Image: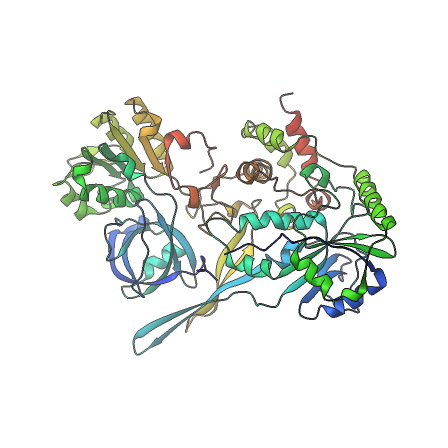
Length: 361
Length: 274
């Protein structure tokens, strides 16, 4: 299976008046359009948007955009066992996602970059058809961060930036009354071409302003990790048995927020759900899973290779900053800051990583 | 769309043999694919077995790749899926996907003596490679099996082992003495030290409970085996079988995909997460 085309002939740079955004969305009627919306709990999350409800004045969504491509729960297959005249038949039906294409508006650069990391995980020797069916029909319209959405953003330390283009089809930059629109892929161009009349050529001062907005945003990011990719991976390699993991995981509640809301975490579970026993009818379901739970690695014998909080915190950090780096030459973290801001006990991956950097020096 | 890696093929159980009864029950299942088209596996590879309604479990394929008529799995009743398998009858349908994992590098062992050391259900992963080597006996040096179980009742493949004694050297053991038992009494690593296999031009393949493997390796090292002469298999909890669900890793290795077979030279460098 091929991965999506990410190359285009030439990228386009355009201007879209903010008031024209609904008109653009109206033209995208062959896609299901998602955009951030505040839910009943005052949290930003993606929801299906129409031309009357699309807006991009949001901070950051609680669930990353990955949830629309790699959902929290999805059906793999259905099974039905019937017995007729003493002959048992078993029917197994593959359930692939529907084919209606999707546009997600308002993807933060960190979340888009995370999707490009998931692309690696779900490719390789075994291509994941559920992931790729959605991925190939999803167009990502990013919004550069003019101001970091929260105080714990650290994307500059993870080879990203508030205006990173990685994984995106279009990057929008907010210039006040207008968006600077940069198409990055053929899919991105397709969206712009659907409503050509709405887009204007940028003036030289628009381009200048984009640069200024991007530079300004970078300056506003206050948090960062000391170590760089290679150094951290090398340090971690020698710290498997360090007492640091025990110390840092002491307060962990095992709630799993850090990985459930992480844009790049991909661990999952597969379980059978039975709707009726006779005849046997049910489905096999994939759900997100979490390396911070003891059950995650516990054998049916009761033996557990990662039996304590220390070994599980270590796994989270090692996976992101050593194993993934050695496998794909990328950090499996995009510095979105969710795990830092939302951890109920304040476990701060940035501080832990800085202790790793300081280790032995 | 290419073949969906998560969809198992249907297979019918054509034979069930009770190897061990009681609390540590083991049964051996033979299966054939219902559409007649199966897969080619390598010795030591595993397959993900489905009991629909219960889930999936990764089981090593104990039949040799040379056997084309069926796939064989010897299964210890332990969790949800393996317990459900033990309830099944001949003619019942299960799902199978795979084969998964690296398998034993049998091709690289030609001309060498092979020493198999197993404990309990650990004979199952060994069985495939042992049978394959036996079928091509001329290509290898002496073949020896050192196998043990807790009691004589816990020994798997009892009839096959009796037959095997006519074809190769077989040393058996049980942990505690029983009336009528004439072979070694003690743990498998002790039997290894007792039999003193010579390391020269030999590959040792050991499977069994983690604690047994640990002490077998120690025994082999005492007998001056080199790390790269010792092979073992590792198991961890698995869900996907294809290196994506994230739980079976030992360091950056996914046991389902990069294992389950490791030389001790490789395994000793990985963190102890198994």
